Structures are given as C-alpha cells and as structure tokens.
Length: 530
Image (cartoon, rainbow, N blue to C red; front, side, top):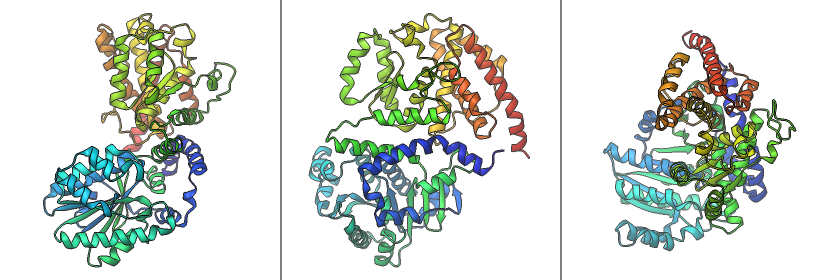
C-alpha cells in the first residue's frame, strides 16, 4: 500500500498546480490576504486529532449550546452545509434551534421578521436587506438556508454591523455579534444557537473568544469548513473520502469542497465584481483545469507532433461560453448542423451538471460552476485534444450522432466506455472529493465485459447507459491503482493518446486496461488483508 505521504502527494498533485494559478490571480485583485486578522486564522489550524464520521459530528454538536459555523461566502456548499446542520439538529427534537447569520445586519431584523411571518416575499426581502449591494455573493444558497431556518428553527436573527469593508474594525464586529448572541440566548434560554459567520472569524482569538466572554456558562463548539491545511493533511488518510476531522475537543472541520473549488469560486466573484457584470467569465477557470491536468500528465502543450504528446495543445483550447453568450453559442451550433436531439441532451446536462463540453464545436457552455462536473468536462476536452480533436479535424462538423453512425456499434460501445472511464479518472484527479463510482471494486473480467458489449450493441438505446456505468467503474479502479502507485504517469498519458476512432482500437484498449487492473488488484488485495 502507498504510504501516507505518497497518498497525499498523488491525491493533491494536480490540484496544487491549479491552485497556484488561482491564488496568483486572487492576490493580484485582493490584497486582504496579508491582513493580520486573516493570517491569524490561517495559522490557527494546522493539525487535527482524529477523523470523524458524520454521526460523530452530530454527537459532538449535540452537546453544544452555541455552534459557530465558518462560512466561505463564495462557496455555495458552505451555506448548504449550514442548512443541513440546522436541519439535523432540529430533527433530534431535544432542544429548539435558533439561527443567526452574518449576511444580514442586525439593524434589518424587522425585515427578517416580516419575511418570517410571510408578510413579504423573497424578492422584497432580497431588495430591502440590500443583499446584492452589500453582500454580493450567490443569493440562492443563502435563501435556501433562510427557508430551512423558517421550516426547522424557532427564530432567525441578523448579527452583523457596519463597517464590513474596513478590516481594522473587524474585531468590533466580533464583539457586536457576541453581544447579539448573548441577547438571543436570553430570549430563547432552552434553544441551541447556530451561527453562520465568515471563516476568518473562527480563529480561537476572534469570534469564539468574544462569544465565550459574553456567555461564560455556554458550551461553544466551532465547525470549520474546508480549511486548506487540514484538507491537505487529510489527503494522506487511507479512507477514500474524509467527511470531517476533530481539530480539538470543541473544534471540528467538515469537508464538502476542495481548496481549488473554494478559490475558483472566489476568483469568479472577483472577476464579476471587477467588470460590474452579472455574468462571470468562466474561461480562466476552465483553462486552469485543463492546464493543471495536462501538467499532471506531463503533457507538453507546445509539442509540434502528435505521437507521445498532442500536437500544439495550446492551439486547441476550447471556446468557453457563459450565460450571457448562450444565444451566440446556439447560433454556432445551428450553423454546425447540431440536431435538435443533441441540443436537448446538451440542455439536459447543463440543467443537471451546470456545464457541458461540446466536442462538435470544441466549446464549453457553463451556466453554473460545479467543480466535479467541470473537472470531468475538462478531462473530456483533453482526451479529445490528445487524439487531435478527430471529429473536428477530419471534417466532421456535425453532431456526435453523425460521427457515431460511421462506427460499428461494438466499436462505438467500447469507445464510449473508455471515454467515460478517462473522464471519471480525470475528475477524481482534479477533484478527489468526488464519491467513488461503485462500492463493489472487484476486478472486472474481459468475458463479462464482452457479454455486456454484445448485449448493449444490439440496442442503440442501451449503448450509452451501459457504457457510462462500466466506464465509471473502470475509471474508479484506474484511480485507485494510480493512488497506490501501480499505474505510472506515462501509462496514463498513453491512455489519453490512444486513437479510439481506429477500427477495433477501443476494444483492444479496454481489454488491456482490464488485464492491467486485474494484475495490480492482486497485490493490492494482499496488502489490504496483511
């Protein structure tokens, strides 16, 4: 089995490269990271005592009177996690729950109360608390949190005060929030108070100390989310996915996003704010994912030949369209002869995943940035580019189905299996937090795959769902083998470069992968039972 250090390195390599580029951009636009208050938070949490399950997290929080939850404002999963914690605590039924939020000024409590009593609607609430003017992050996940509180909690309070922009006054805001929490506990003496406040406020000497000073008898717990140093350390754990860790007795850290996901989300907001535009520019985010995966695979983006490297990958980067350019993309697709059926599939994937890669026109469409799916789409592009974007360069400007009709059904099935396997593998490299595709990780057998291929290829409707299921399973096993050091990078690069459009090639590649996985599974299984 791989050592802790090796596991940490293999899980983190591609992310760290991508993160470096994002952090450079953020530092160029936001110098606050050098402020003493933020540095104190970053230095406070370097190690943890133990790994926790979600049940152990709930058990710990069940003992607290006040729960301080760190919020990374740009990351929607932060607000959704807070909503989930409130719901789970309320379901326990032993104590009522009250929620306090930084997003709303305490001065606007009367507006929150009107919405709580259903006297005003969502739009009026958003306008009157000046959410877009004074806060500026995504409304939807925050509003979902408020709705969850109204459905599950006894009361809802705004905790913040001005000035938000002056970090020299940030300590005063901590003291103000602590006094408000003390008032809330007086009004609701039997309730447990959950508080969602910016993550930098969660350093021991910041908001937690102020809350303890004003509430000396209260048991206070802190829930951090996705702290970088703890995330990178947890990457060395044997478990495939770490849900949470105990930093110390009264401090936990839960993981629902990667550092790369966090900072890409923030970079998108910085870009949006700098351009005074409601539509963020997703192109730098997509290009950074592609560049990081290529760097991970040791691909030369400037190679002049297409042998062991893709030819001039730097010249094949895709166009990236966002919400404001949807009409332009639609016209482009129509000019390229994309069918209505393919358009429906594209819209369905965007609805489900937030984005999609369109090999027909070598373009991305991103409506909402979701790291897991964007990483998978970036991998799909790189796989196409490693094959020279064959559909495009061979004159196939029509739809995927038009190209697919030229391949025998059996070849098409195997090609889709490999494509899905590669896409899944790449998404795990860039986003290790993605859940494993299957719980049954027993090695696949070529005979079994042949039977699946024969059955699927007899029905056009069966090819894609069967190939997707099988591809994810193979991709999951490739990733596990990579983590264990059983698959070298050159082997992975060769997989990306295999020309699946050649007759019989996809079937041959699939067989070779299955044989390789079977051979490496034996020592892995032996080590697991040692």
